[in-house]
Image 1: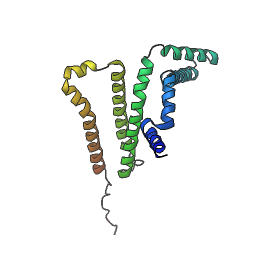
Image 2: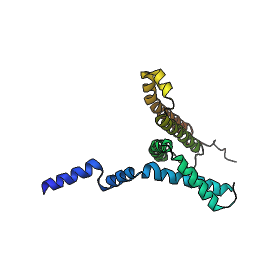
Image 3: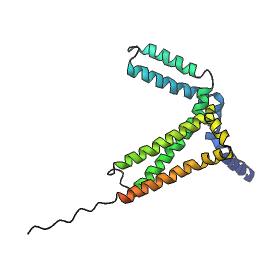
Image 4: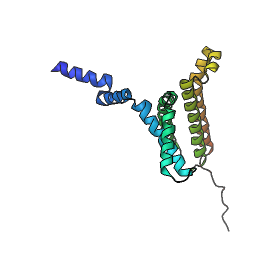
Length: 192
């Protein structure tokens, strides 16, 4: 009985249990490599064709074109590799933005400070650029020459630069919060 519990515990911890097995089976069936990318491309193309009405309001033509483009996009594995790289990074980037919003809302009133929209936009734009460049680099070898020319320094810069940008951004935000504190109104002279 004890050996059965130990094997159950190790099975659940080591492989992710039933959910891990289901995700592995979906991966083996090609759900993540073919079905989901096809559905995403199909939905985007169909939505664009329907919204813009470039070819009229004929839904049949829009479906056929969206299906053809979706299937042709999956002919080679470029789309599958790129989606496998960009969407996990997107999840990490969104969680970073969520943490920044939570931490900023603890110290700053986000509703009454319009400059916070620009700070959040800047952090979001920087996160988006990092996600895009890292995904392109992993999928298609984008920027490989730049890193190989720098050698060890390229590796160090690649790892240190995001941390430095986050530290500089935090310093800028806190300095802006301190300088943008409550404004004192000028003293009023009582009327006699």
